[in-house]
Length: 123
Image 1 (tube, rainbow, N blue to C red):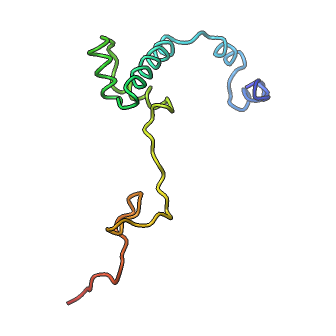
Image 2 (image 1 turned 30 degrees about the vertical axis):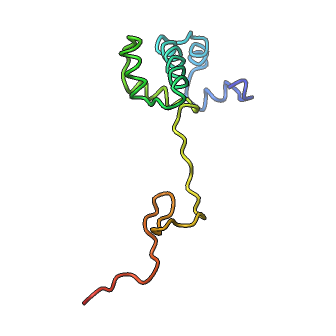
Image 3 (image 1 turned 45 degrees about the horizontal axis):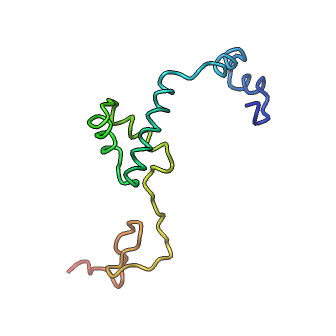
């Protein structure tokens, strides 16, 4: 907070937190989970990079368990992969101005676009 030029006293008062609690939290060493996640993230990113970005969380999870004997939950692997911008799947936003394809569909799942009068209702 101090590096963002916010008053610690004011922020603690607004958040109903004691300044001593904030100081204790700030000076506390990293938790075991944080250290393990940092190490595991580097291992996961290395595997993802070595696969040229083709390994997803399921394959990385299998490689960790079977190849390296590192046993960790699938959810943890997925969480750590998704928090790394370089490892997220690339998603291209649909261009709303792009012309429909031969079937009248627009990118982004807009479905079929009517090209003429709709069905005749009532026989």
